[in-house]
Image (cartoon, rainbow over all chains, first blue to last red; front, side, top):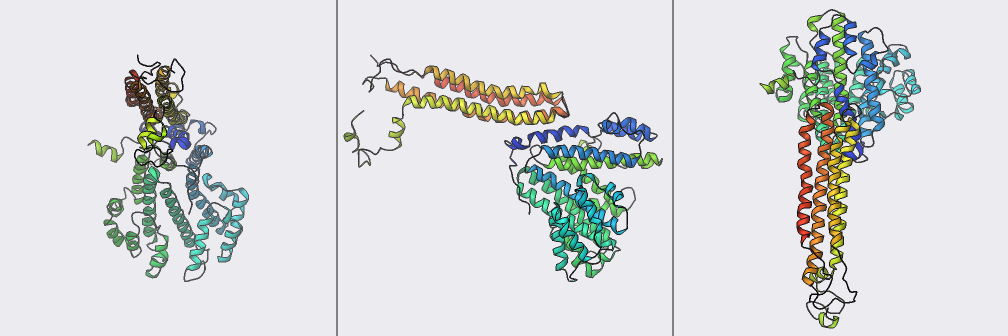
Length: 388
Length: 198
């Protein structure tokens, strides 16, 4: 849908347009916490020690204003730091890198809109909701305040699209969703009041976003198409597996709904598409899901983590580990856009790690504290395997 | 040179105005033209290669230095390597330009016992030595530029990498030296005759 403008460039002319911004993001790579930092943090007794240790890392500037530290404040402040860096990169970027960076932010815009809609249904205050929104996906204040004012039915949703959402960058995804739901046998969007419906809307929007992003990077060509194409394919497959797994025990798993509704939520890109997704759309329970995933070697390992069910690791942890490995590899080559996506996602993983560690310390659960996935760690399982 | 009426009956010519193919076109281009184009290509392509290398490495250097300011001074060596390829081009151009001499006596036609052999040899020799230097310096400049860009980014993360990647750049800039050595050998015995042979 989105056609790249501008020059991407190969090995000898990438630096004309994008050399400076790539140099910036690679300089920012040194701000990730190292193994020694994680070691010190896990040894801390209370949150003041954590704060002391963090002031020696790159987080020193953002922590200088706060006196005490609790996990939610740490998360807010760290995300704000990431957003500041991202906006700095975005302001220095030219086409097509600027469109690429915008694509990264669309995901957060979709999440914010869904958060506002869901919150409005449960009658929460708009200001409280806006404080919870992810800063990377913010719109104009007036746009955001008008979202919860619409009626929670089919007509209200179409009105919301016509007046507010069509001007946002994620408008085309809503347009495709409304188009698709009016094509369905039922003829109109079911009552938006149900919680399940909000989740289905969000999954559909994320699916359109992944497909659009994938088409965009394939058109860019070069190293970006190779690296980002792979990352997005794996992302699409992760979504497909998660949708299937989460649908067990909900109305979405009924035989009539599987092909009509659940299959529509699988993205049309990825290693599992098209043969795997058509098999997944018939799956009724976890055993069948396991049998389907056995046919795909890259996912059978992750599924076995879940199926063995020892409780040590969940399937989400296995997905995070595999994602971190792939995103670290994006830093291994130069002259492509994959480093920008990888930087944002790896920074998010680091923020998740910090929040996990501080929560464990706060609740005094020291045995759980090492269950995080470190970024750029020398002790990572895939690195130590090679040494042996 | 013979007059037109006699020449045109050779080959496929039907009128006095056509030529007899590439051989006639190329040999009728003045050796002075060849020599001066050689100087232009030698200098021009060398500078293109040097400039290409400098913007390749300079943009990465400035970007990486935002978070790691210590790399600023050391990594200017990459820019200096690129600049050296332009200097090779200037050296070659000055040597060649000093060899281009006009005849002592101005006349409309060259003498019958003019040293035509040396005349053509000088023109062709200087043209190709200019091309030798110019084309090798483009390759050398681009190569040093890409290696210098990676050097700046790697040095910002791990200072021990700098010297290792510098060795790659040294090999890349050796390509330009090959060009100027061969160019000097080619143009050594090129001398424009300034008077008729006795």
